[in-house]
Length: 310
Image (cartoon, rainbow, N blue to C red; front, side, top):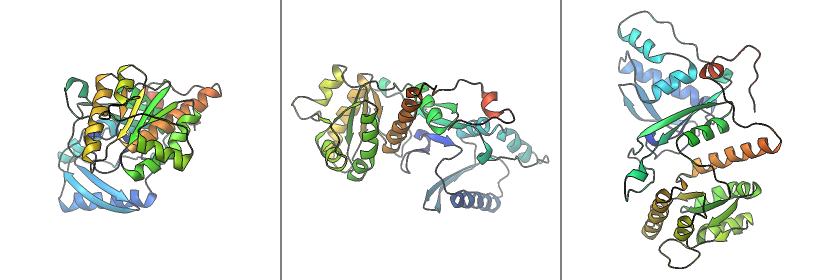
């Protein structure tokens, strides 16, 4: 998952093969999965949700059914897992599938699709309850291309000029400073609510324009800027501990949805989008294409001697 634990797996973005897991974490996940399978005498599809940090692996839950991710994983690794599971359930001899993630020359990204625009007054934020109504999967030569393709396919509009940033948790404000700097270096104009702007200025020396929160009846106001089409992207990471921020945050997020402005509500997604935009900017600046257009067969069945793009 791109997002940290706390976001429902059905609402989370996925990258496959995983891009940031330690080798030891991979080993432990595989070993624990095998132990669960043997202990429960499973002979068919099942899914396990793990929570991992610094090579410590914990099991959240195990479900004796196939997940919605199974077709996505099958397409990515070019292995028909449901056929393997069916043969196993029927007692038909089955050889293990050979999967070598380190040898793959493409990355797959799966992102959720939401229907907040059709649900009046719903709060477009992520949590432990699933809210997505669909998903999109795309392939790319690296995680940045695959993720940006998937985001666009899910309805995300790439920003062209102005980005509004309003981040609640203090640690996440600090975490985003270096990425805010990247956005400015790419030519974007950043607007930020007061406390976010203070952190971006004091810890990054960044030039940002302060805007007032929705419930502060002063201009320039975030809502006014959204309604007048002056904002291309809103990055709003909620702080659930602050009820006033919750009200302001709801108004900001809801206004972004109602005005058709792209909205990001998770810090990890905001970071990966920023890194992807930077990679796109650098390649196009040097006269190279960023997006590759290939068939599934070309991504998953590369020719001998083919070399992936950085």
